[in-house]
Image 1 (cartoon, one colour):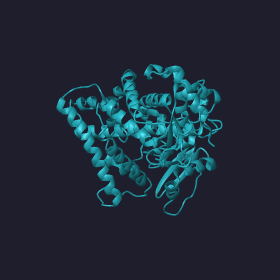
Image 2 (cartoon, rainbow, N blue to C red):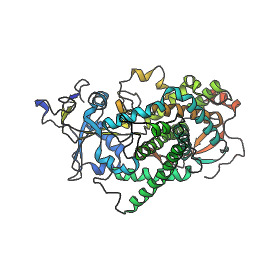
Image 3 (spheres, rainbow, N blue to C red):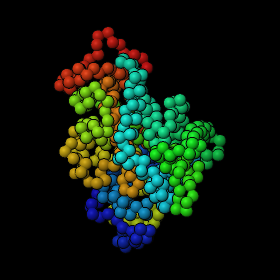
Image 4 (tube, helix red, strand yellow):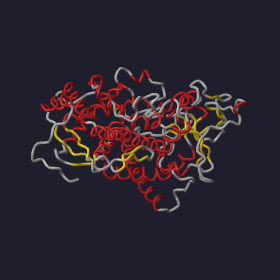
Length: 491
């Protein structure tokens, strides 16, 4: 283990100075296989590989991915050094992101330098706190529309429900677009894109999209479908020449320092990035939350009681957020155990030193929220689902980078406030009407793609939750049994 203050250094933001005493010192780590290094281990079980590396080798772990050197950092101070104190020397990992250039282009997720700062400034107003009231109303309205189609006794994949719901909310709030007619096809396209990205990230080499492999063909078709949707949204806005005050308007009517508007390709890259990232994180947070609540009925009953106490029978609003404290704690704990961004990767531009170890230029530096969030140094009983741990301002007492579900530093997720607001409002709205009984015969496995998805979905049985039954349910610590004669529906 490294000392918390023994962080690392570079000779300036882009310098190459390394202390003589560590110029040859390499961090411990697995040797891996000849030629491939630890790439097979990473591709087979990235979560298990990172976890075992941290347990066996400590806070700085060295390994190789084929010919590329890599580090895993497992201490908050070291994470802060990479993401904040010397972030100019660490960029998004170029080898891996070139795999997905066709879908993300040069949007906020992949851009760098001056161009990224310019795009970030343009997008920031769309996520300002002043806009949350309007966004919150839309989030609740769309959730209630979804609940109007649910029936007690029905068995469904609540992960797919969450993905469809948050996609529609992102399209409406950020781009003032309705996707209800497109949502099934768009969701399939997104699933295919994410599956292919997962495969590509495990490759030790780059295969150009133009090579007609079956996976490439499926990927290109899915990207084309998303492009068609986004092109329609952009054309509609440009033809009407109307500034609606949303993110798409800001991108459409913005000009750079030379007075030039953004190109259609630039706008497309940002819209695709926001459409995918703007719904994926919340949908995953909700999916894992409902899975965990299905395993912990007492917490689920407490959540329902809070919704009943704070809201009664009315719909929640953004003004209710300060009073939905346990609901927020449940979301925070789900994000701790199952962070959608389970790993962050950076590439060192220049030689430097981290934790007393030499880091050559070109090294991939990984930070894994999955590992950090399950470290007993920061979270006692880390494997347990304990929403109450977030009471009494725990977040302010933790080391700054021990909990990072939305990343950290200058590149922290621009939509983190949006995502938390959305998750809490949706969770409270659903809790008023239904209990989601997890179907134990359908196991859920973490599936690391570009995000951490629930493999196999999260299948639940819907049980109506009448207002008068909520208080009894909470007092007993167990959900009420369904009425006699109510049968389990087939999916």
